Image: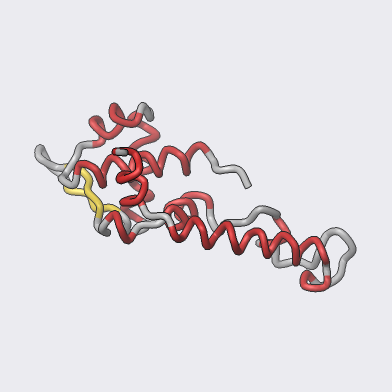
Length: 138
């Protein structure tokens, strides 16, 4: 599994929102993360639509988190942007195993990838944005 650039940027944007804790305009978020304003706005839209952030219009408007940083996990953000965690396409594909045309659970590769995937997903779900912020201060 390789984290997409959009997921990486989204994690950084959420971290900025968490650190600031107040309404922050998209331009300041963009400058803080070195993500273009256009891409920042696209990501903020996804965060608002996904219920992670809220937006306020107007001169004093901006964005802030709707959820406390200690309740937002890396897994939540990555899946919001990239979809379900999957180290192999066979884990998300509804079809039978492409290796030999049998049911997924009878494929040794599928079972092995699922074990690894489950551990990865569990670990990503155990790390919060608050953990990341705290770690970056040390």
